[in-house]
Image (cartoon, rainbow, N blue to C red; front, top):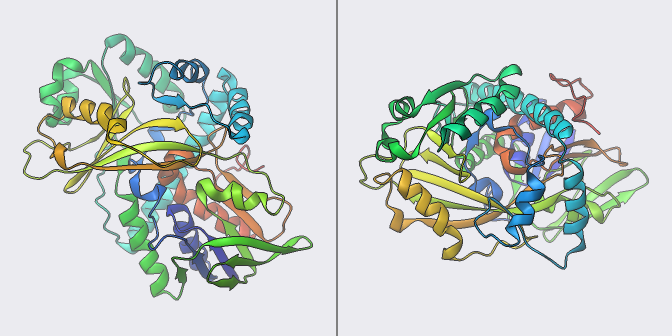
Length: 413
């Protein structure tokens, strides 16, 4: 078939790749000049099944409430005139029970672990260079009490097959000596040795080049203006560069998916949650990070991409606003400098803010809604890079009428 993929982020490009492997003709439509230029560019770059815990937990409502007064909360809620924020927030709060958080976390972990296995197949086949670091991810805590709670919390994923190693302070520094100067501030950590990191934009652009080499078409600088339907099917996608017809269509527009879906009568429970990141050159600093880490107290994540480090933090309920100012990055930069004092040229940090396409239960949207030839692959939230590869394979399976390799119970509405 000829399949039109709406969106050129990591989810759209991996989907096109999997469809092309099935023998389909693929066309990707992307409004930016390059693929992977929005959310797929500035995220933490972590392939992290070990961080599959959903945000919609019993603790989340109080954190959001505190954020109206305290500005250093990891989750921040900004009052807005957008009614969609409040309707989505109500659905989010309905997911914040212990039972639902446990269920959704296990579903998310199932998808994340499967997706990582698909990624490994792809890099074995394609030999893509993307600054991969396979030394795991360290989730560290600043007090023994917090570490003990973290270990107890992690048992849910461990029982589901996630490999974990509990490290004391000395073990943390032995794993990554670049943390030696911050040794006394760390009580210990949980190392997930099978988690990994890599530059998602670099990967996506290399994979997009493979798609083009094999006859695929990628239309960048092309803004989707509408979807035309007739009866129970899509007939074409309308853009500012002409119309595109296909046999099937995949909606992979991330945070913008609900805006276009709404024009054809499909409601998607996706809302943009703003995140911030810094990309900092290592320069000639002697002790850059060698293992990706998450400071669980401050919820600041640090990854190493070759000659750069990527620092990410904060989840702000602020609508489609991607503006930022230096003050927004002061806390995360300060935390990173404290941890890795000789880790990077902090004065040369590049600031970025982007949107995570969040669903209330933190699980992506798959399959069809009402229209027989429009498939959803969107709403991957804060670990879209982790879940993209498996989601792409699942979408290709659904289009082919195949049963996906993992159970879709709880994942397919």
